[in-house]
Image (cartoon, rainbow, N blue to C red; front, side, top):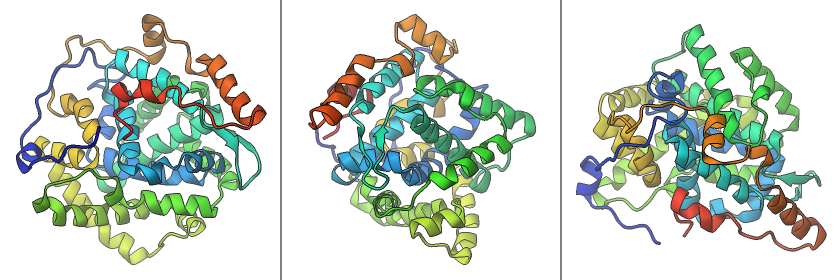
Length: 361
């Protein structure tokens, strides 16, 4: 279904919010909620994550094969951000279902990387760990650089423990998640020799830094504001990336612009953080499909049941296999289609995902 053009009234008025079934996997007492709910999380933090991810040759090969970020950038970005928001703020039943369906979607992400010549698989646990840690690390970095600053030692320890809990929704092993800042830094150093700034990666990264191509239609009166916001978000995202990574990717490395954007973005995010209405407007600007997921948290609407589960508890309760063991027959069929019959993989999972993550059209 094509996106409907919102009126200015739609943008400015608070949405109608229904209570969630439960608090999902974290809840208001978690450090993860504190970090992810700050306005930096689903803006610069998320953009940084999806940009940096492309340096993994296996991941960018899968992304490039579908061409979804180029053919339908708005819906691809919207659906991805909605999923990440569900993991953090969604109820346990819906998010467990979404994670299970995502394994099906990723089953079609198999093929041969044209850069390295190696086989890739979007469900590969190493690829999933890269995606997971890049997201959690990026969102924390954005919070520290443009938000309230560094967490206390106890809060940071809790944050990485919660990161490991969230990993139970993916095919990677939660035991592989580092539990300290030093461990995270060591992980990225270990990954560094495997990262490649190929032409495919550079093209994807530059495209994903163009927030304007990801945004839905907005009222004419807000478009000048949108141009300013997206320009600052792009520069702010670049300023969080190491220079070696930007050099590898062919991205700007200017220190002066990096420094100039920090106070403006910090002030802007601080202002937004004081107003739920502004946070909802910003979220709707970036990802309309994410609004229903995050709005109950932002508006402090308590769920019908204040229970907090772990993903493993939810998977057992609702009858889902562990992601690493889910849909093995489908995954094998997809590999046989691609590597054996030399056919395109089927689209199983995509149709099933649309009521959960949003339409792909």
